[in-house]
Length: 483
Image (cartoon, rainbow, N blue to C red; front, side):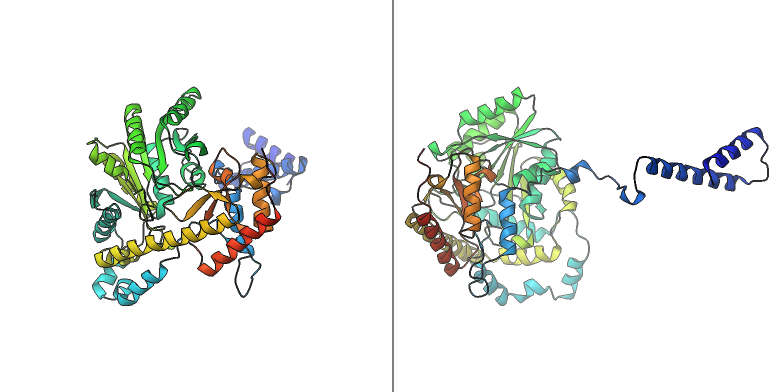
């Protein structure tokens, strides 16, 4: 029907001249007329109905995930061309992933001795694990996790199992804390260089903003009070509401631990400003030489603080080398945060089978103590191999004592002493030397030429090949930046 016919019908209805049509038929005609008019409008502006798409949320199309950062781009290039000694000896060696494979044999050995932890073959236990669990998770697992966290800190502090909130990894834990502590547009202060994934974890879905606390190589990138105050004032000048400070300790990407003095300064400042202090301590069990690790929990106890603004993030991805299990935790001294986080954890719960397995493993104190000591020994040995090989290539590094990576200084190889020069050097290392390392700009480092190099996700033969590639690259690319 043409639109004029519909209009005539409507006028007939208005004048009472069309009486034979049912109400349902009239309604159908009106709906059909509307659809045809819409189609005509599309045609009049040159649109095809098949080209009209339904819009999605701003969250889905924004770029705050950071996926285009060299930090993630390097991973993709590795996946397309992974090194293999026999099948692909000219492939890319992955040194941009903080993954610990050095002690996997210890975990596999324990599992062979304790198959019941993996199978859950008892009928009643199987039913219990297969059915819904509450937000608290398995009590046995929370107790085992609390005990493990205490052991990693030399039993100098105690953790209450009731304050532990299980999450699917530290990524979920950090995001969940942002949902609990801040509103969209609020700011968290984070010392640089900081973990490249924080732009995704803290900002993407929460709407929280990150304001950097700039740290520099002149004092080995240590956090200073003046830098904290400067960042806080900068946020105030921008009319931003600062809700807290977040640090990683041990630090990713530096591979260093914060001193008790620095932690006390951060705690004092956060209390004075009435803001939160979040300490991501996922590498607390990967400290392989002095100085020793201080947890913020120790400072809270030692200084006798009322710690309701302090929150700790932990995970088994790094210290236990189980990132695929997706096991993280929030430990908060704030009752409101614990309650809210537990409710929100329904979106990121750990499977009951995984909790059962790890509760059994972590309750084996003999194995836990042996694993911690042996894993730290292996990390130290591998770190020494890496820095020795880098020294032979003329590449300097920040002295580290923790983590699965080394913070190296390649500024002498920069074609220009700026961000563009750093990215050009990174691309050459990736595509010519076929080594995926992460440029400092991905971690918001202010000084060009720093890179994070991971050392724990490969065997020793692959490490030797990687070091030879570093040395060959440095030999054919002598110092070009003399500024």
